[in-house]
Image (cartoon, rainbow, N blue to C red; front, side, top):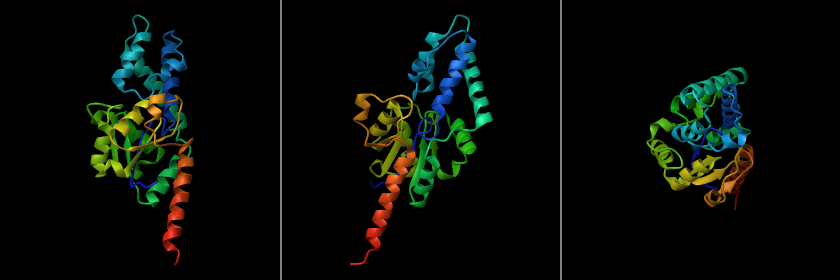
Amino acid sequence: MHFTTAIFDMDGTLFDTERLAIDAWQAAFGECGVALSRQALETVIGVDGPGTRAFLTGFLPDGVAFDDLRSRAAAVRSDAVERHGIPVKAGARELLAHLETRGTTIGLATTTFTDRALENLERAGLTGYFRAIIGGDQVEKCKPHPDIYLKALEQLQAAPATAIALEDSDHGILAAHAAGLRVIHIPDIKPIDKETRACVHREYVTLLEFRNEIRDGDAFRLQLTTMGP
């Protein structure tokens, strides 16, 4: 697989933060006397802020404001990160290091707002790998619209045909595909829809599996170029 640019999703792809978010929302709702299932919360994986608000508002008990509940969920999540750090997905560090070694230009395209994305990257010690960091607050339309990937490509001065996107969710895959990138699917909590699967170029169980394949392919190509007649 030939590519010169790789653009990562963040939550659920680079970091195992979707589980943190689900745990935090469950805790916040639980404090209000609402036992919200993980299955219900999985519905908003990959969904932007307004979409999440619209869905979760339907579960609010009388007298509880959504913004108050969101603040409580954010506090629960922040406490978990303070105690345990940002959970980095298996193979993320190895893949980023290999991509840097091979000269790949790396970007981030996440629905999460830029300040939170930067904070997460800094906590994980990964900021230096990224030439462009595009958060959901930098575009008018978030995933599944292609805007966030188009902006990342623009900042990276890369053409869609030379780039891949690494994604875990329906909305992210659809956004990257609409922007013209080949999509590498790394499954997370929620299985993608059948229709979305048609937009996936390849699927790997983990980022490490993908790293191993391209590392071995790069080594094979290097061997071919250095072999004599």
